[in-house]
Amino acid sequence: MATGRGGFSSKLGVVLATAGSAVGLGNIWRFPYITGENGGGAFILLYLAVILFFGIPAMMAEFCIGKTAKANASKAFEIIAPGSKWYIVGLIGVIVAVIILGYYTVVTGWTLEYLFRSVLGDLQGKSVLEYSNMFDDFTADPVRPILWTAIVVFLSYLIISKGVQNGIEKASKVMMPMLFIVLIILAIRSLMLPGAAAGMKFLFYPDFSKLTLQSLLDAVGQVFFSMSIGMGCMITYSSYFKKNVDLIKTSASVASIDTLVAIISAIVIFGTMFSFHMQPDEQGPGLVFKTLPNIFQQMAGGIVWALLFYILLFLASITSIISLLEVVIAYINETWHLSRIKSSRIVSAITIALGVLSALSFNLLSFVKIGGMGLFDFSDFITAKVLMPLGGIAMAIFIGWRMGREEVKNEITNMGKYPVAIYKIYMVLIRFVVPIGITAIFISSLLPH
Image (cartoon, rainbow, N blue to C red; front, side, top):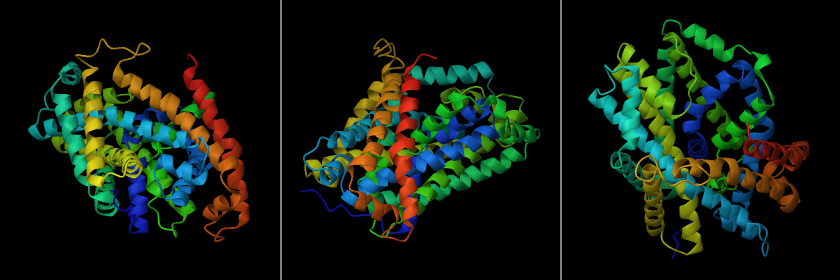
């Protein structure tokens, strides 16, 4: 039979675990790139506005559903809207989590490879071309990436199999402070580099002439993915909230931590790259696995800084993986009444199988194409550009138009702690601003640029 659901033991545990779900690779390797591309400080101001009017309301919508229903992402909709087809929205979230796990664990494996190489001193004494070839050779290897993926899944399993309180909460209380400590150390080091001031000017000076409609869509897209909206994570985590958890405070805390990590990461990236007269014109793997190792080797104590940076990447990744695993484990556990251990093993096995396919899409399975994309790229496309936006739109409509008004009002006002005016403002945002915003980015992302 299914084990008891359990729950988070403290408000700190709630915030750190939920923030761990939100903070991920997107904060570190995508946010700096799109900030620089869209006018630096101008984009940061736009990003903060999008979080306030879009991100926090959407997160609170998922919190409302999970906290009210006390069930997994799919069953939550069944409980709140029995006899309807709304459970499909939650099921989409579960499917999204499974697909993302298939490629996100592979990327996390890459961070372990580079963490290992930095310990061995392999990230020293190479040319720019050699760093580029090193990453390409690694992903072309059909064995090593799979080995690291399996290690990532195993480490995640050790945490997730222990449950919400003894696994997720305890791990988050250790890993999130560690992530912040490493990030702050790297930021201080970056700011001490000669020429870092030019990077800070580029990052924070608001160039409003670079803001376009695409900037707005970039901001919405970044907030959407970064805050784990539309993938079932926030519904699942909030189903473990106690009754006294304040959704406004929790959402604001998580959004603040997520944004802070993104901005400090941008300080690290821009300060470091401008110091060495390089523009951060790459995002993702190209930036952190090809360009930055070249910079680290030129810094005094470069091995240490490289090691800290890849520890940072790993911590950001693993906390997100844990939340994605929990979405699927809770679904299996409560749908088929399997124990947590069995559910964890099943999800881990599925994740490794999908991870193998994603890893092999760079080598042995590179010939397999879906819509002209390899399995890895297609997984990213179908989740970020299609399923998550659709799920997010449906979630907003459900809270705004389907869920009982009294239930929503009680959750938003924390049983009358906040004035009704806040609830009324929230309903305008969730009924109109959020679904229109997500629809805009959904349509835009599918149009040719």
